[in-house]
Image (cartoon, rainbow, N blue to C red; front, top):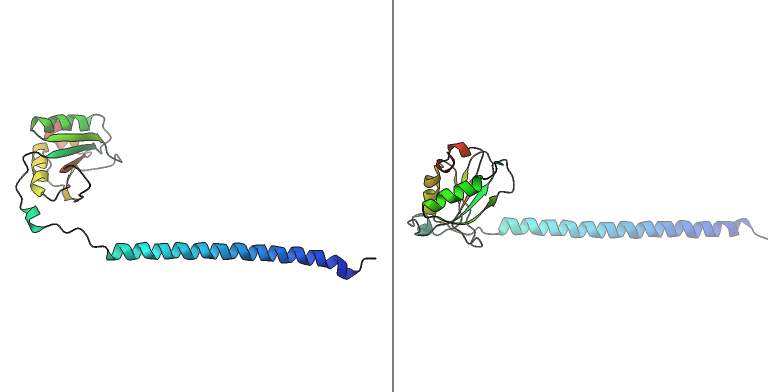
Length: 162
């Protein structure tokens, strides 16, 4: 004959198992959160302590290169502008090595980006296109070109696209 004690034991074991499973799940979750927090703290530390690549002083005063390699990207959303600008730059003896679309089509003003630290190259491209104000330096030794042009929604002001 079963007593009241016998019927409560299986319930207690099931309840203990649920509590044990919940504890394991919570411990695993806490462990993953600790790892995530440590990773985030490390990445912040690396970003804060990383030194930017220094541009030597002679880069800023260097003369224009004889051959300037240019990338032309369309950031305006109007079809065919990168091709027209590339053809125009080739007439002025610039070596257009790449043309295509920019990652978005919401660029308001055309931007000329100096990739090597020789601002004279970017200024020469900007002058040829008729870009007056937006020259930016983003030096990256991994790029195999001198200047990137991102055509913006002000393309109708550019000499190449009139």
